[in-house]
Length: 338
Image (tube, rainbow, N blue to C red; front, top):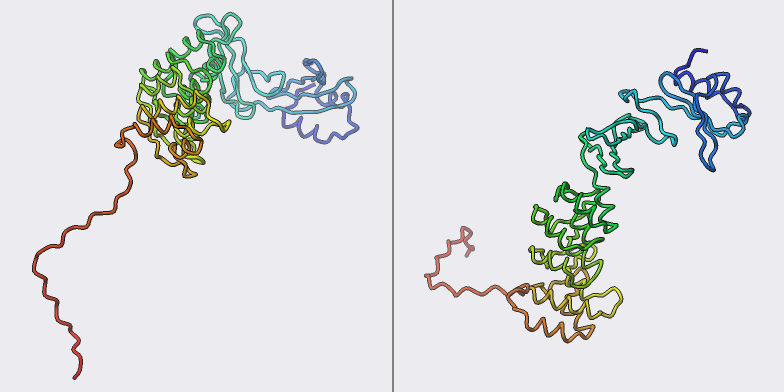
């Protein structure tokens, strides 16, 4: 039996009804090439065509559960095959220059390369992804997974080759991820020394220092490293609140400030944080400390140099009147009638 094209197969299969059987499929396509069997799923029977394949679900090779036609996209490498889940095309028998096993994944609809994975000793060693411009480069995912898992050795290895300026899809930098998940001051210093922006903003306009204090409102070696590197203590973050790190330290989530939060607020004030900046609700560190009855914070505010705080708007001084002779007024062109 001559193999049909995917288009011809789609036309004939589209005439099937609820009463059509597996035998009807075989009458059109011939016997299946192979069968995919997975635990707790309907067996999938694969019919390979010259320009694609048809997949038919049937438990007993009588009743049809589904019929799907897949046409190979133009430009797809000949070695690429549709994976068992029919989610992507893959090539899994590649080798890197070092002899490591590699796999490549291609888009189901366009046939474009999505990513390339290199395995070493049974584990993912490198993951490369295709950028919107078509170029392929190292993916952030393995490094971010290592940071989130606090795997120091892997973070150190992957950080050595990562760009300090790289961002994820949410605009967060590596410093943001460290601040949120793995507050290691050594990695922060390394990134900053290599050119990372200490006050970079993510899509929520948060800086790494803001994220670190938002996650854990207390002083730490990580927070110290960011401040020593020149982090802006007065950066207004998160537009719905437009608050600063000092607001975070004073306005505890639990309502009552802990000793760690109070110590952090005093330390920030001593480092020059502005305590009279108002957030979107009009609250300042001074007013919050007053309402919560925190004399130590108010004492730190009273000791802080006034010059570092926002200057109040003073009314413009009146200039002394000039002693120049008054200028003659031009005569009116309209004379009153007598």
